[in-house]
Image (cartoon, rainbow over all chains, first blue to last red; front, side):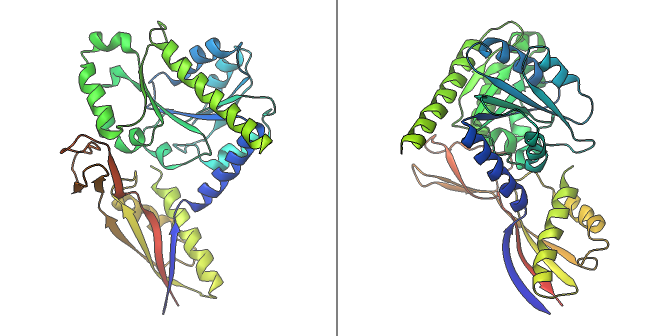
Amino acid sequence: MDRVALQANVLQANQEKAAENRSLFDGEGILAVNLMSAPGAGKTTLLESTIRALQGRYRLGVIEGDLQTELDSERIRTLGVPACQITTGTVCHLDARMLSRALADFPLPGLEILFIENVGNLICPAAYFLGEHLRVVICGVSEGAEKPKKYPVMFHKADVILLNKIDLAEACGVDLNDLRKNVRDVNPKAPVFELSCRTGQGMAAWLDWLGSAVGGRADAKRAAVSA
Amino acid sequence: MHELSIAENIIEISEAQARAQNSRQIRTIKLRLGQFTTIVGEALQFSFEIARRGTLAAEAVLEIENVPMVLRCDECGDAGENLREVCLICPRCGAPLHIVSGEEMQVEYIEID
């Protein structure tokens, strides 16, 4: 019997595919944004509000992930934005290979932001890098103040955290200070925006932040071209 | 419930290496699994028993070494381990803590015939 040392990352195949996706985005100058949350946190509604606000300024595209149905991509297409649906069947997350297959048929050239709406799930999507530039985690305040502590890996890996449905906090008996503290405990560094995508409260700050992320990408692309 | 796809990845990686060594059978797969991942060892073992059927790992044992979550403060050097409730803010000086280990998901070695 022989022992063979490997020291191989279990997710290496996914990481390699994600790196390919990333070079595709970078080659096209696209900011890829991975939206993740529990089911019902308001991902699609937030995406609709974000699209309505940014539509005139940026060219947008959306890839939707769900276990079943094309409902979400249909919602996005009614806004006049190209959208494609990945139905995972029973798989509880998107992985880099599923995304890569969807990208092959997606009209990427000319886009500035590609939103990828992951399957509603606070566990598995945290493990699968898709090649995105930004990981956005959305938490509906009505889910309770303890959410970040119960799903620390997901919240920890976020580049930005959106606390949605802020208008419902009082009605749901959620102490926002507890929620803020729990977010900070698991992710001391990420910017946090408190908003309601239904009422529009707090949306401007999030949109400005996202706009500067797109601007940063454009600067990086110009620098790469002139270098 | 992505333990099954993780188990399949572990077997794919191990089989590829075993084939490269002209092995017919994998006896042991040693995995380092961090505490701060989304994978549960017990569920992974169960998934592994399903995923190994019909592969070079059909008779293999999956040995899981649990890697504790170790945190360190870059500001004041304070270190902590294995906290029950995750808090990544230094209890001594309030700076963000750095994760030293606990995020591993690595096939360390295989034993083959």
